[in-house]
Length: 287
Ligand code: FDP
Image 1 (cartoon, rainbow, N blue to C red):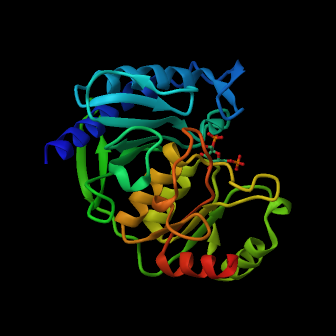
Image 2: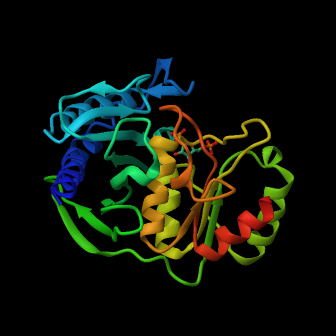
């Protein structure tokens, strides 16, 4: 129980940092002359959000390790039992075009890299027209997922539990179409006859559409990148935890993302999340 209270305090701290992160975006839309550990260009806003979250989350007594997509290795922040893995600004390439982005927080009870089954909480802040947080606390499969309004003071006001609608509506798939393997492309042919395309290029905003309307989001394995683009510790696991908590399913193409063996802090994983029926069909298509 204490662990869960501690995990809740991590989500509180991430929400509390959100107004300052949001307020700091307008002056930080320029690219810096550096790359993150995954070889991606870094914006001033990425570094700003990462520094702020390292202090906000790393200062908590319960947090012993802070890791982020922007740092090659994890930071030792004390004796606390929890490890947090953060994508400070997911979808930050949307900053130039002023489209939504988010902050993703995974809270693991164990050392990093950790398995998704070691998650004790996960959440994301969505900087959309409204600042919201979607989050759950508890062991995977036991956690309900709630949506919160994040106030100007950084408090969370609960707006209700999230359950994927039974009747799915939207799909959004990352990667260039010519890069999609033939079996995935065949699945897309089916899905696009049934659902409507909604892809914005920020995982967290695209997943939020699936949580709201039902459907499927994927950043699949590509011919040029067999493990896709998204990272297991910072993106795949927390999103799988949340979608499964909302009644959906996740898959790396063969089984639940939460069962993928963690071998490296920045390892990538193909991500497919959404309504169970759509993920089951995806796994059949990829066999
Ligand atoms: P970004 O590079 O802008 O941070 O995490 C990586 C990510 O965004 C995801 O949020 C998003 O789903 C994906 O990359 C978008 O990639 P594409 O530009 O290849 O569509």
